Amino acid sequence: MNYSSSEVKYNDIEKEIYRVLYSLRNSEIIKISEFLKHIRIKEDFNAKLDFPRVSMLKSLILMKLKSIKSQTELSKFLTESKEDAHNLGFYGENDKILTPNQRSFSHFINHKLTEEEKKFIEFIITKTNEISQKFGIVFDDVESLITRRKEGGTERTLNNRKGKKLRELCRYVKENIYPKIDLQIRSNSIYKKEDYLDILTHITMTKDFTENGCKTYKRIKSSNSPVARTLLYHLRKYDEWNTVQQIFIRLFDHIYKLAIKIGILDRRKSYDIALDFTDIPHYGNINNNMVVGTKPSLGTSYAYKYATINIVEEGRRFTLIALPVGPLSSYIKIVERLLAFTKDRIKIRKLYADRYFFKSNVINLFKKMGITFLMPVTGYSKIRKWINRVSAPRVIENYEMGKEEKAVFNIVLVEDEHKNKLAYATNMNISNNDTQLIGKIISLYKKRWGIETSFRVKKRNFFARTTSKNYTVRFFYFMFSVLLYNLWILIDSIIALHLFGKLLKNHIVTSKLFGTFLYMIRLVT
Image (tube, rainbow, N blue to C red):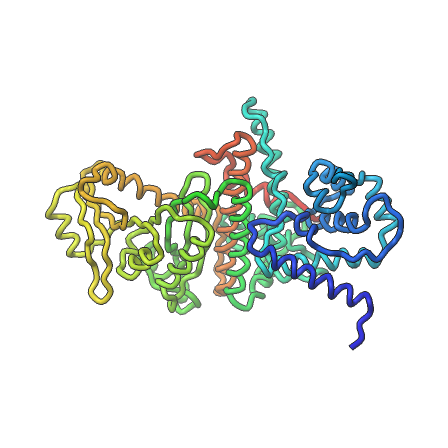
C-alpha cells in the first residue's frame, strides 16, 4: 500500500506520542510543556519567523490541552512561567528566555499557520488525549490552583476570596474532569455532556429521583434541558458495569494524583485508612442483578452492596476506591484488591475495620500484606466468656481463632466512659504493661468514624435516587456520588490552602454550596 507524505507524517507523530507517553507512564502528574518538550516535530516549513516554528506549533497545542482561552492569556502564561517557555523551545543565546507576545501569536495564526498545520495540531491533541487515557496519565498544570493569598482579612474579604476561588475550581472541574466521563454522546447531539452531568449533579445534590430531578433542574435553569428518559438512555448504553467502574477508578486516581501534586497528600507519609462495606437498601425484586442478602434494616433484608476504602485523616478523607459486591463475589478477594490498590498509592499506618471483618481469613490477609489493623471483636462465645470473667484493661497476647484456618492476634479489653467492656482485635505489639497504649485504643478506633462520616455525607449530601432495574445505571449513580464527594474534599482543601496556607479541621465550603456552584456554572452556550 502506498502512503502519501501526509499519512506518513501522521503515522510518525502518533508513534512519537506513544513513545513519549509510554516513557512517562509511571509519573504522578505530567506538565504539558514537559511532555511537549520530548515530542519531536519535523520542521517542514522554511518561512522566516521571529520565533521557532516548532515552538509556536507546540504553544498552540499547549493552549488547547490547557484550555487557555486566548492568545493574550497564552502569552501571559509563557511570560510568567519560564520553565514552560524553556520546555517549548523559547530561548536564545545563553538560554535567555524570549517569548512571543499576543501580537506575535495572532500574526502567526492568521498569516503563517497553514491549513495542514491546523489539522496536524488537532490530530496531535486528539491522539495525546486518547493515548494518555490508555496509560492512565494525568496531564495537569495545577500551580494556578494553589496560589496562596495573604492570611487574614475581614470576614467579607475572606468570603469574597472563597467565592472567587470556588468558582474558579468548579470551572476547572468542568473543563478537566467532565471530559473524562464518557457518556458516548455524538458530536451532533442536541445536548452536550455538560448538560447531562449538570443534571446528574443537581439530582445528586437534591437526593431526588431522575424524573423529578430533571423537571426541577429545568425550572431552576429556565432553559431547555434533557428529560429523564434521555439521560437514562445514555446511561444504559454501557454494556456492563465494569466499563463504568474503569471510568470512575481512573477519575478517583486523577483526584488522588492532584492531591499529591498540590500537597494535600504526601507519598512519603503514612495515613490511617478504614475499610467498609456499604449497603444501599433494596425493596424491589430480590432476583435483580447484584442484589445481595444483608442484615435486616429499614424494612428489608436485601441491598446493593459496595466496598470502599477511605483515608480517615482530617482534611484528607478521600475515597481511594469503591467496588461493587455481588451475590457471587469473593469477599476476601475484594478486600485483597482494595488493599493492594491502596498500598500502590499510599503508605498505610493503620487499618480500621468493623466487626464484619473479624474473620480468620481476613485477619490473616491483613497480616500477610503487612498491615497493622484494629477492629472490634464479635460476640464469639469463647471470647465473650473471657470478657465476662476478667477485669479491664487486659490484653491476651497471641490469641488463636479458627479451626480450619487459624489466625493469631492480640485481644485488648478496655472499658468506655460508661464502664462497658469493649474488646478489640489487633496485631499491634501490645502487652499488659503498655498501659498508655491500652488507654488509647478507644480513641484510636474512633478514627474509623471518619469513614462513617464520609458515607453519611455521601448519603445525605451526594446521593441520587433511582428506581431503575438496570444495574449499570444504579452503579453509575453510586460512583458519581463518590466522585462528587472526592471533588468536594479536594476543592475544600485547596481553598483552605489558598486562604490560610494549611488544611483545616472543619470544612470551609459546604457540600451544598460546592454542588450548586458546579451545576450553575456554564461552559457551553
